[in-house]
Image 1: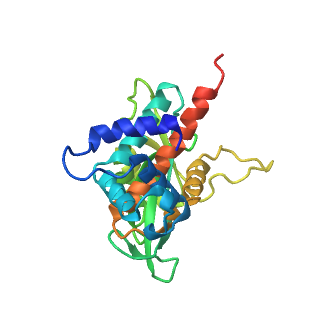
Image 2 (image 1 turned 90 degrees about the vertical axis):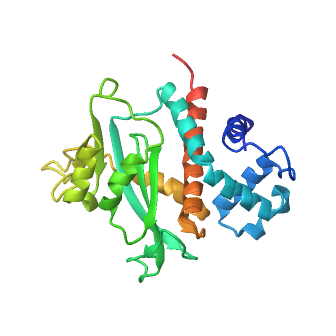
Length: 268
């Protein structure tokens, strides 16, 4: 955990989940957060955490406590806002997509996965800006159609979107899964200019060149970034809120990396 990032998280912990004045002293919060990151990347069981992170039950309790107070979502919003202040967020072109995954232990917010012989599965609906930075994530059962999650995903953006005076038009790029009245109406209700993949679109012309630039791939790349974490690729949490909290933490880390690059870039 970088020192700069930990200082930001420590301020949020003191604000949203301060320690009680009485009772037992908490375990090291920084070590607990390191343990949460370790489990997110490896997907190991809580009782398999290395001892350097502290007692596994204490780390698990800290994780659930921070999910309940919305710490990871607040961290995500904070880092996104800092990147926006540095001009590192492109709101003009956005894209959304959903991905299904396994839910090993079932729980809330799961459904039969149509691509996995009807076994329990989960779905993540992701909205990104033009460079792939995640703006919103929604978790649902694997049997929920992508288009039915679009409106909820748009509403779940963690920061306030810029108005027409800052960005005159916001475009939303979607694949064929959203080529239906539900997807079209959800995009328009969110104030977007929808660009939905339809039959014949983006096919090469006579010179074998694409007529339009493809912009949907950035959300698919972001999904791949998130899937590098074993604890996200396969859902082991029984509670949907706990799984969503892990995804929100990963999204926050993606923005921290961008913030680090923006600050390190030379000024011209």
